[in-house]
Image (cartoon, rainbow, N blue to C red; front, top):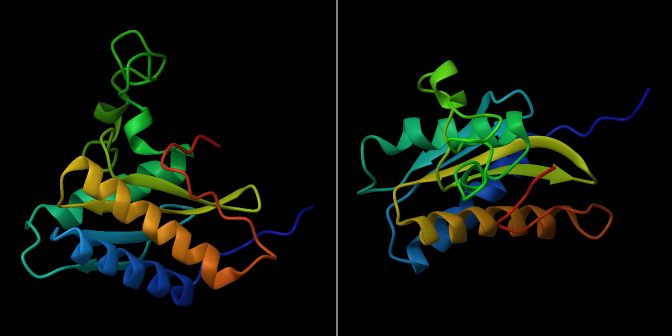
Length: 157
């Protein structure tokens, strides 16, 4: 038996606030979504001016990152699992509307455990990445040194 960490609304709020701040600094209108380890919604905020499609995209990115324990952009990079010769080619077609294989989704990994996911949608790819990384760094700062949060863009657990 092992001890399991659970992401709660307090941490999700900290992450959303940091994401909004990073998006404002980048002048990008983003939607930021935080899900638990099962991919279920904890928090979502759509900034003023964000596209009306971005909430669904952010939720799909967070769901994918949490469930498959990797940053979503890693699926479609050359040689990635969702490319034409990859072992997961076509996986996004198996769960229409829930599975995203493009930039903006990150697993939330604390002390080696995937405890959730973050999805960011609305900016250019590099903006979505910067905002997602900012949310993870904010979680690390909030939790302190007793926990290790993966804060790289390219997470594969």
